[in-house]
Image (cartoon, rainbow, N blue to C red; front, side):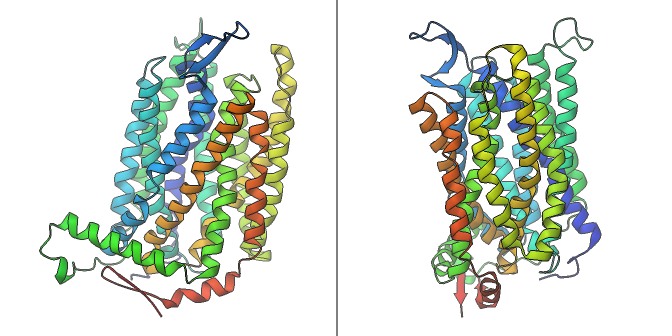
Amino acid sequence: MTTSIKNDRRTIFGWAMYDWANSAYITTSGAIVAAFFTGTIVPEVVDESTGELVSRYWGMSGETLWAAVVSIGALVLFLGMPILGAVADYTSAKRRFLWFFAMVGAFFTIVVPFAPDGAVPAFLILFLFSQVGFVAANVFYDGFLPNITTDDTIDAVSSKGFAYGYIGGGLYVLLAFVLIILSGDDSVTGLTETGAARISIAGAGVWWIVFSFFSLARLPEVGEADPIPDELSHLPKWRAYASIGFGRTIGTGKKLLQFKHILLFVIAYMFYNDGTQTIISVSGAYAEDTLNLETEVIIVTFLIVQFVAFFGALFFGRLADKVGAKRAIMISLAIWVGISIGGYLLPAETVPEATKGTATLLYLLAVVIGFVLGGVQALSRSLYGSMIPEEASAEFYGFFSVFSKFSAIWGPLLFAVVSAITGSGRPAILSIVALFAIGMVLLSRVDVEAARASRDRWHFEGAETIVD
């Protein structure tokens, strides 16, 4: 394994800039795409019980459909990522895999806003492909972290990546927000608000591509590819690599059961990450559908989150240096519980001028969300990276993705089910508290030093995973 790039400033800068590149997509998804879907793509129909116009398709509200498709995206990625990660490690091709999936995600991001109003299935399918590209690319991106850092720098570098992402994503959404504000009847741009939203969504894909070029030019491939084992040499390369990836994934999965504290951390992460991701993924739809807030208010909320999160990520990186990553995560999770309760208590207004009060409260909540968002994400990534074997980092981050995406099926699904049963997103947002509480209890039982000490027990030979 090549170690010359460890703690290299140019490499770390290039790595962090990929977070800048792809964050335009994820912030746009939350701030614009979700509300655009519920408010524009989902058609309005007459509610037979009230006689009022409501957004419905297949008998479901826009926010219920949105939460459901996020769950489906997680399910699509459930089994494939560890296998692809194992192949990337074996062939030393993390950079190539990262590039491929980034381009797939960016392409479908550019295409998705071309779905016409009312074309709900087409819009959801295109968005699903963009989600697959985004999440898959992040597995290989995260897999670089142990390769370019050491135990004493991994928390700070992970936090830097998230901090760059928050600024990059925030700047893009700010530009999109300005375009949407300047649109409408008699606007200087000549665009309708819907047209401006479509351009903003497509532009996120362009941003992703441009800055990916800049990032990956500074991020070298690491390691050397291992030769195909003799027993698989008669097969076409793609089948041989698939066999290696599948074999190593199965072997590593079985062996992982022997490592109590790594497994316990991953399970804890499954729960509390599901809570954070559910709130992020449904917040735009919740604000539009339940709180009756305008798109401009939702975008400002996401801007606040993004720019405050820059400082929050750096703060929690320094806090981890003083109290440890685990304890810093516990502090952030306690705050997330308060955020869920705060979201439940936000009033919904039906009078347009009265929404200013609700918007102000939402902005205050966004400040708190931004402060803790970077901490829980960056430190979870780095804490896990400090516990896994470096030579199989993409494979292990593939497992990390599998567990987190498997859990991410249930949070949005829980929200969708509760909102469908109760007819409101309000009790659904409150139900997320349970995910944070369970995650905190499990995380408190993780022995970080014992997990780090177990890294030397892993060895990988071809498709075989060996544990001392």
